Length: 300
Image 1 (tube, helix red, strand yellow):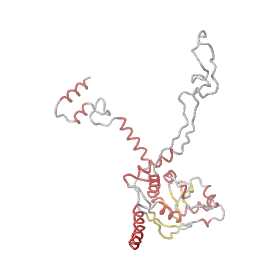
Image 2 (cartoon, helix red, strand yellow; image 1 turned 90 degrees about the horizontal axis):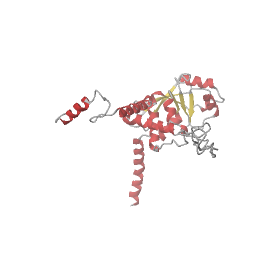
Image 3 (spheres, one colour; image 1 turned 60 degrees about the vertical axis):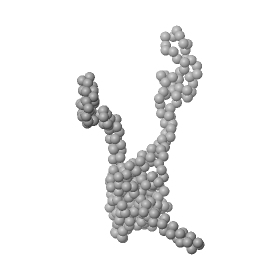
Image 4 (spheres, helix red, strand yellow; image 1 turned 90 degrees about the vertical axis):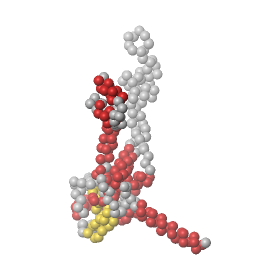
C-alpha cells in the first residue's frame, strides 16, 4: 500500500519523468511494465528466441561471399582452385532465415500420428452399469468414462498436421546461405566415380584423410552428382559419421549438422548454377533483353 501511495503521489506531481515513475516500483515488481518497461514474459520470450537463433550461429555467424576453394585430386594433391558463389542472405538476416528454414524442415517431418480415443470412440459402454440409486456408489451411465480403467482418454493427443508453410524462394535462400557460410569447412575434390571398381571402406577413409577430413571424429557430408555408383555408395555407407547426398536430396539439417562438407567439382558447378547470386540473375536478364530489343528495332 505504501508503494501504491508513493506511485500515486509521483504520478500526480507535474514534470516527473517516466524513468522516475519506473524507479518507484522497481523494488517491488522489477519486471512488470509500469511506464513502457517490458514485462517478464516478454523478456523470457526474447531469451528463448535468442537461444533458438544461437543454434544456427555455428554456420551463419558471418556469411562469406564468393569463396575461393582449393581443388584436390583423389590423393589430396592440389589441382587448382574453384569458386563457391551462391545467393546468400544479408549478414543481419542470415541467422533468422536459416533458423526459420530449419524449424520448418524439422516440424514438417512430424507425422502427427498420436491419437487417443475419447469416451465416445471406445468400443462398448452402452449399458448403464448399475442402477442410479441404492448401491452406495457414484452415479454412472457408462463403463467407458475416463475415470474407469478401459474407458476413454479425457485430454489425450489427437492426430493433427504439424506442417507449416515457407515460401519456396525463402527455403532456397536458407539452403544456399547455409552452404555459402560453410565455405570455411568445405573441401572440393575432383569426381572420383571411376576410382571405385568395387566397394572399399578402407579406401574411402584413406581418401577422406588425404582431404583433411577425420571421418572417425567429425560428421561428414558428401555432396555428389547423381547418379552415385553403387561401389561409391557402399563404401560410404559403412562410415558412421559420413552421409552422401545428391542434388535433389540436399537439406538444411544435414548441412548444419556436418562438421565438414566434401563437394565434387561437378556438384559445385551444379550448386553455382542452381543458387546463383542476385547480381548474376540481373546480368542474365539484361543480356537476354538486349538481343530481344535489337531484334524489335530491326523489325521496326
